[in-house]
Each structure stands twice: as structure tokens, then as C-alpha cells.
Length: 164
Image (cartoon, rainbow, N blue to C red; front, side, top):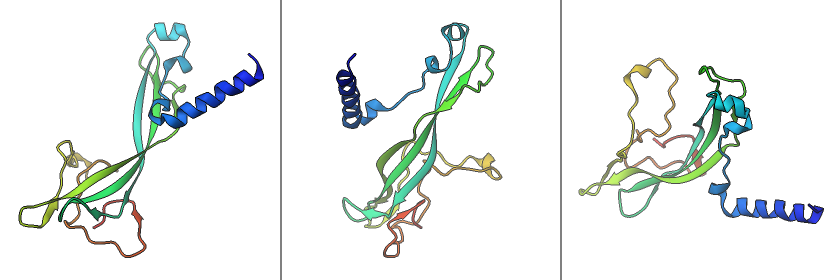
């Protein structure tokens, strides 16, 4: 392969990754760390997306009085856990580059009386009762603040959690 053709292929791959970021996201592959014999012998890999950071914008009202939202930026870290043929954790496990996603999250819903109440999505999970003394991440939990939210002081654009 000529040097010019190789450079063209690399450039095309970079353009494709920029144009289609979701399809360019790396995935866990057992072939990266295990031989064909080990794979045939029963080695496996498990991808776990760990939330490592979540930042919410200041709450804002949209779509009529009482409907409140925040813009949420979530950073996940793909962990590729490799297990040998006996089910033991392998030190060949690895991490991929962090993945950042942005979404709009509804925190308060308008009521017929003109006020608002906390919005709880259908797939929300309450805090398990057995986590009283454990470290507990509040990611993907229902909004626990007041509705309507207390407006932040001027100049505070971002926070690490819901505004209360």
C-alpha cells in the first residue's frame, strides 16, 4: 500500500468517526485479549457501562407553566471484564474511552391546578432499603427536590445534582 493511499484511508476513517459518532464507539472484543484456543475453551467477556460523572444544568421551565427540565451530561466508562474457562476474573480485562451522552430530563410535571409535582419516570428505581450504610450512587434516580425548583443564584450555570 502506498503512503498516500494509507493516509487517505486513515483520513476517511477519521471523517466517518466524526460524522457517525455512535457507530464509531468502540466495543469490547474477546479477540483483543484471548487466543482462539482460549475462546474455544470457554473464555468470555462482559461489558459493563459504569456511570462516572453526571452533571445537570440549572432547571428551566418549558412547554407551559409547571413543566421543568434539566439538561444532563452523563459520562460512562465501558469496562470490559474478561473471565477464563473456569469463571475466574482475568487480569486481561480492560477499559475503553469514556462515552459522553447528553439528554433532557423532566424533573417536574404541571398539574391541572397550575402548580407542579415531581415527575417520576416509569422506569425509575427507588433507593433500595438495604443501602443505608453503603456508598450509594444517585444516578438515574427520581428527582427529590421541590417543585417548582428553587431558582439558582445568578452565575451558577451547572451543578452536580438536582437543584433544591
